[in-house]
Image (cartoon, rainbow, N blue to C red; front, side):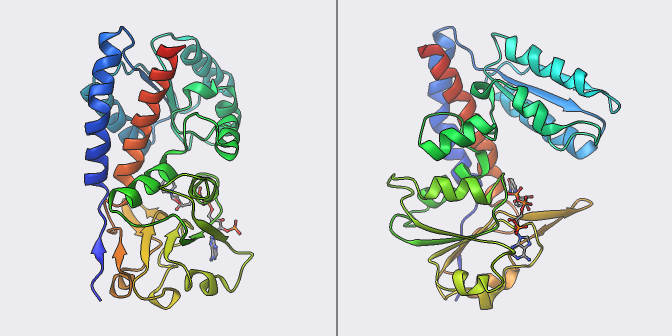
Length: 286
Ligand SMILES: NC(=O)c1ccc[n+]([C@@H]2O[C@H](COP(=O)([O-])OP(=O)(O)OC[C@H]3O[C@@H](n4cnc5c(N)ncnc54)[C@H](OP(=O)(O)O)[C@@H]3O)[C@@H](O)[C@H]2O)c1
């Protein structure tokens, strides 16, 4: 079997096409969206991620104020930067680049952020809103996966979805999202992890398997039922080399599969900007 590929770029393009007129309407009403970014230190990969998001923000017509703190910045400096972004009226959403240098407590910085401005959707208040089904910024990578499955018409409602990994940025919020009562979710979700040594028993019976472990090659064809949809979320970087959770031979068994490069990543960025536009719309309405 040759699996149908599910690239993320067309999904992201569709999301940005939807956001364009909404951004125009906000600007026309005097509520230009803003994405503030905070970067601590000199890590070149982190600087690259921030630059890419600032470029996209500028392209979309956002304001994009940026605070860059030095590698030896203190926690108090980071908290002051977060407060500055919280207080800025032209900044509706904020991204704090993770991971910061080791002396910085990222969770404490995230807790100090105004949850309504949390563009990543990972503030504890937003994880709580997700669990309760309340509106708010939604964790970006999980939201991107739901959007990708919907874009390609992969049925999720009523199907068995098995998520490999219960991490806080991907597996756990994705389980909350896909079990919500909505047409593009509404799934029977199972979450497996190191506490479930026979996890292949669960992935083998699923209609959709989502790898969220960060263990290169952990998902192999023998863990899958023929025709399954496979989404690769987990990756590990060795230097600049990207090592996905999903072994490439899984494409021989799957019916549909995200590509090893350009799968979930583009949808995550699109969801960040969707969160930012929705934050601006909520602020404009209040
Ligand atoms: N593509 C993107 O845009 C994007 C965005 C965000 C995250 N990610 C990637 O998603 C992955 C998950 O990130 P995260 O922060 O949510 O999770 P995480 O904190 O890294 O946790 C990994 C999860 O995988 C499970 N796991 C690890 N090894 C396993 C094994 N041998 N057998 C079974 N389960 C195993 C762990 O189980 P235990 O809980 O039992 O330890 C844990 O639940 C990472 O690779 C990350 O880079 C990608």
